[in-house]
Length: 441
Image (cartoon, rainbow, N blue to C red; front, side):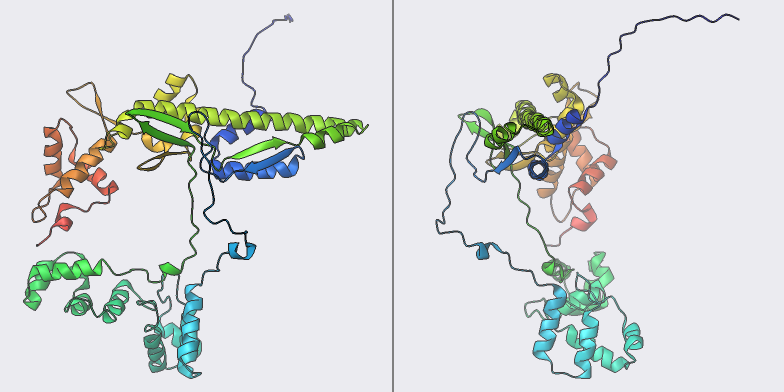
């Protein structure tokens, strides 16, 4: 048995995922709000980094510049900047009970029941359970619930959807004459659109049942939802598309985007301190600042490059009022720009493009294509959905188009789809089936 030792030199190329590279990838993936938060946190760690956030909507790079001016030039009153605390549904009910009812056993039970009203306005406790918890009579609990259901908003205190609708109809003087009776006695048939059966029962026209059904659609299934604490979300576009004399311009906007500034005076002052640890710390933080600044610039350039390529491939969407999209994938954009597909994905997620007819997420311009048997070209799924929506919008409401009929209409235009695919697209569009779209007027 003989052992030999050999020395060989091999050259291997591999990408080392350094902390700085990971940070650069993160910065590209951040939307504007996430980027602000990231830089604010970094400014707490790095004394050389100062974050400046601009709020104007006219500072664009390239071809267009502008300014933003406040309409209100009065001095800023910080007290006026404090938002009003929203009133919860529970607080609103308690306030009404104390205001309208004197201290009695019924009011006590009303206050108890109010604690079991959920955020949608429904009572999540049966009268039997309420009786057991308070050792109260059924009549007392029923009276308390009846009074509770008379409070605002209309429908509050209901134990199910049917009762919620009945409470709202009862307080609406403009409700159709038969609405309360129909909802009370034939609620399931009304929801199932068995209108002929209901009309025959009451010896009225089907169109009257249809009017009741339409009226029910105007009522709220969640009367307490208006009291939810909703935070307003504002979208800051990363790109702006302008059409000037038939030519498309893609502009990178700086509005609302945070900028980093180097604290030069502080750096110069600290450099004069004859302490090696301080000197090394300052060098480390300066390298970090330079890398963050470079990553932010790279982020803006990448978003602009990707956005410009998207707009060039989807020119019909910006120039034609029909707003049709062509099939496009992340891989196609990546190959055109000679970058990785994951880079394109990060550049379009959470990034928005503003036009004169709306603001769109960059990812929304990527749409799958539907292969056709007799053609080498693919049809955009988005365009097919538009066609389906147009067919249904213009259909005869007495005889709505079935999914099979829509398949035939698409085939006439050279688009071949299965009935199942049409049904799937119709569901995505939020359009009911033909039997539920039928109208009697």
